Image 1 (cartoon, rainbow, N blue to C red):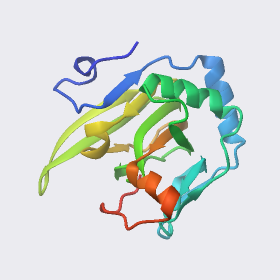
Image 2 (cartoon, helix red, strand yellow; image 1 turned 90 degrees about the horizontal axis):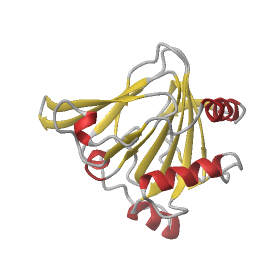
Image 3 (cartoon, rainbow, N blue to C red; image 1 turned 180 degrees about the horizontal axis):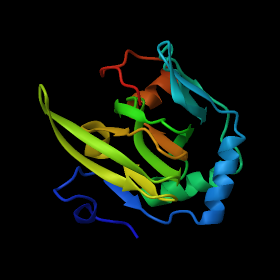
Length: 209
């Protein structure tokens, strides 16, 4: 079931956020977790800092150490049907989701406040393992924010597009139980231009998404 905004928030929430529970069944979830665990994950690194979570990318890879944006290994066979289903959920054209990021969150791992890099547009995430809460905030003043959150049930899927993708930051609190995720991304106009003509200067402030 896809929930409308009235179901997601006690107050009106950002447009462009959609979610659906039960996107995968338990057998599909177990198979996806096993595939992620065997994918050769490496610790996340950002400008000399090493994070607790472990990741690997397919299709395209953004390097947070040097800001490089380059092709990565093609999607493995097991990931392609999930990509196709994610595109259908998000209402995107076949082949639009060209990047995939696999993440394992060990105990204590989370993600700080960020927006995804501007080379990417729509973001579609599949949540596996322990439940999590996607926290959202939008700056309204020097020290003031609008805040809300979205519960991510195991085997659920969510979409960030439009306003919630560009005007809101998101984060995930440190996990008390292991969690895994698959995040698919489409390229933005900037990303498409970079894939065709080489890197441009990033027009937005640096982020850690």
